[in-house]
Length: 75
Image (cartoon, rainbow, N blue to C red; front, side):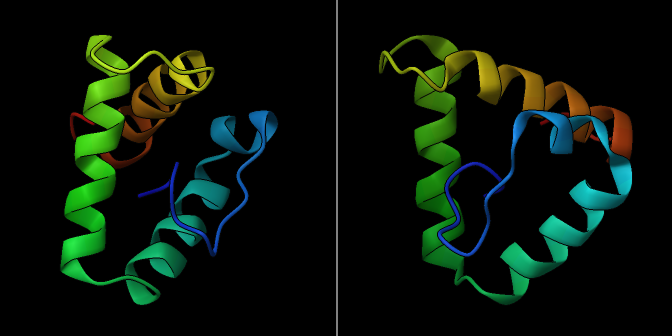
């Protein structure tokens, strides 16, 4: 959701800022529907597992770690 939501533009330094991640999550949740979040989760999982090669792989992995740190959940 934080990677693919069209209403967000997270840059590299934003990933390390918990306040920005929290605000971005609120925006993405408010501006998306369940089916979109499900599709984005599948897309991110495909990138993380290497099923879909992507230039976003490093960013998605870094964002996943940041979400785990910020929210205390596994991304």
